[in-house]
Image (cartoon, rainbow, N blue to C red; front, side, top):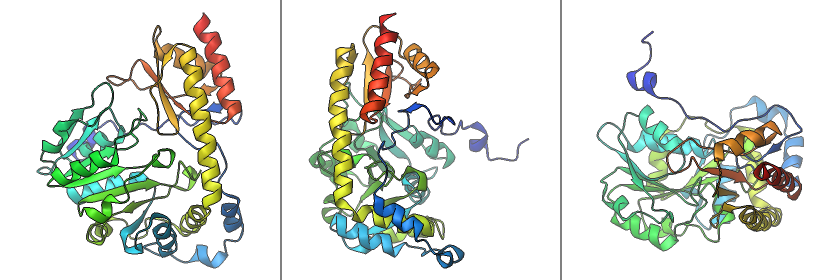
Amino acid sequence: MGYFRDNIEKVEGYEPGFQPKEADVVKLNTNENPYPPSPVVMEVLAGMGVERLRRYPDPVGDEFRQAAAQVNGVPPDHIMCCNGGDDLLTIAYRAFCDENRPVAYPVPTYSLYPVLAKLQSCEAIEVPFDDEFNLPAKLAGTGAALTIVCNPNAPSGSFVSVGELASLADELDGVLLIDEAYVDFARENCTRLVNDLDNVIILRSMSKGYSLAGIRFGYAIARPDLITGLMKVKDSYNVDAVAIAVAAAAIKDREYFKESIEKVKAERGRMTGQLRNLGFDVPQSRSNFVLAKYRNGNAAKVYEELTKQNIYVRHFAYPRLEDKLRITIGTAEQNDKLLSALKVILSK
């Protein structure tokens, strides 16, 4: 009908992972934490007063900023609250990119990045990873206004060292956004780079390590000058009162958080070994999922056979990913059901 801008008419939109309606499924397709959030979160929810719901939330979410600042060892003015990590990505594209200011990122990676570029009408410079997912040297020379590195990378689970990312940021004229949505499951993170470099933004998510995917909460860590600029672009009340209170409670409960992370890591190690025994090539992952390539079969067919049994994993019909399955690490029981189903499917 011609109502939309040309780029909106042409873009295919981001396709989220399938959300089954049935309760009795093995859902290992969207990288949710299989364990419940901290019990403290449920206490906060139960005690949420009517007055807090009636009034607008704190526009900057100071309750969470204070808590996150203490956990990350930075001042509160280095934190910006977001409606999930995707909100920060959208804000960053709007803040830094346009027809004359491109974005760059290595591929394959998070499939939302090119969609946001098309919506913003900016050029997307895609620099291929090698087969081991090493950081491409050419990424530093693109001249992009915004460079994004997902670390650990989705969907590979690979990790670029903090030193390499520091060197990249130092070479760039523009901003480096390090998407650390999955970093809770890695050995180290890039928070310290914010102290040394004025062009680094760290993205964090409460969806993965803290089991809060349902409330949509993430945050940025950056120097105050960058935070101030990003806040000009965000919605006036981009996070709600319930989310602020719940996220603050969750990030404070360090003991529960660490226990949850260690359980996922233990299952990640077990699953990696079991999948390799079944004939999959599975690189070491630093995230809460693995990327598994079946050496002698059709990944799409395996995906379809699993779906018939109400076992959901993720298959991407994208270059270099068509022959692989991304499998979220679930509970031991969920993982065992997947492994049992795979043994039957692969024996046919």
